[in-house]
Structure formats: C-alpha cells, structure tokens
Image (tube, rainbow, N blue to C red; front, side, top):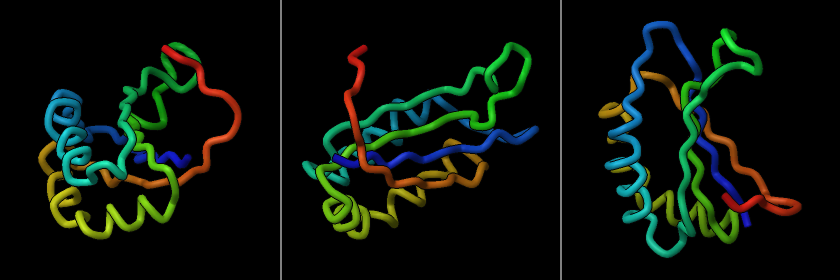
Length: 108
C-alpha cells in the first residue's frame, strides 16, 4: 500500500482553511479518485517539536492507494479539478510525497 502525503508548509501570513479542506476538498478527492483511493486523513500542525516552536507544516493531507500505479492512473484522470480546488482553501504551495507503507499502523 502507498500513502500520498500533501504537505502545506507554514508561511507567515499564509492561509489554510481546514474546515474547507475537511468538508469539501478531501471528499472531492475521494469522489474523483473513486475506488482507487482507499481512504483519506488530515493533520493540523501544532508545533515544531516543542511548545512555542512553529510547526514546519500547517497541515498535511494523506491519501491511500494499493499501488503507485493505481494512484498515478486515478490522479492523471482527475488532476485538473483536484488542483483547481486548491486555491479555495490555501495560498500555500503544496508539496507531494509518495511513500510505500512499511511496518504496522496504530489504530486510533
């Protein structure tokens, strides 16, 4: 299984609307990517490892797929509408990382 992580770097004066991200953008991604996308998660940055130290990323989004190929195929067919929605919740430049999951995952 792979995880696609979209990182939103912290920037003084930068805008990130977590409510929109959770209620609109992630459901849009799930809908457009269809069965290829096995699930989504979001994280809000709290600090950089110690209280008072700014988090390096204001937010992170995660999308799960069976394989890199299934992600590439689903994303290529839907990149336009997904990427055009980004301006609705942030003015930050997202950074994408594709990772292969290893080990065990803690259940919340």
